[in-house]
Length: 61
Image 1 (cartoon, one colour):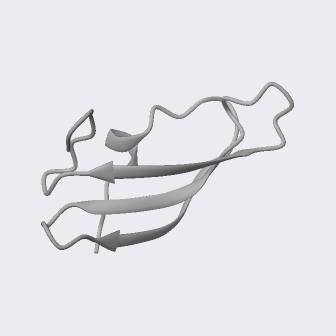
Image 2: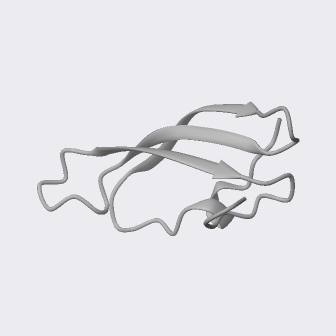
């Protein structure tokens, strides 16, 4: 599986890392990781991104 994470997350000045990705039953993806770019302490926040089969995110991917 190859996922273009630059389309999924607008990264910032600090680390934005995806650690796990899996294709879902409907052909989309779930990507889990962490970001230090959007946390004022820069200690990191966890994120989970759900996409449709084309890599699109939004309210109902």
